[in-house]
Image (cartoon, rainbow, N blue to C red; front, side):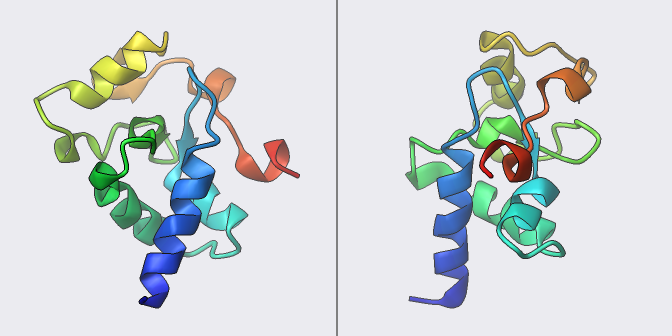
Length: 110
């Protein structure tokens, strides 16, 4: 097993804890895992999460609340549709009430 595989599994473990109707960022997951400069690796993990149906990758967005990973979902708006089905308001690929629904794993899981 490569070191990145282990990191990806740790990322998936955190992502599975994101509550319904909430979102977090790649960077906050990285920070929680003690790898603050690894937001991009968290993104790669989310991009590879398709074989793990229980990983809610749609709940992980960039630090500004943009749906930057949406092109990795099947269909043109699947990421947005999944978020909206959980009550998240998205306009122009931007989560509208981002600060209110943001889930910080470092605070929530401590």
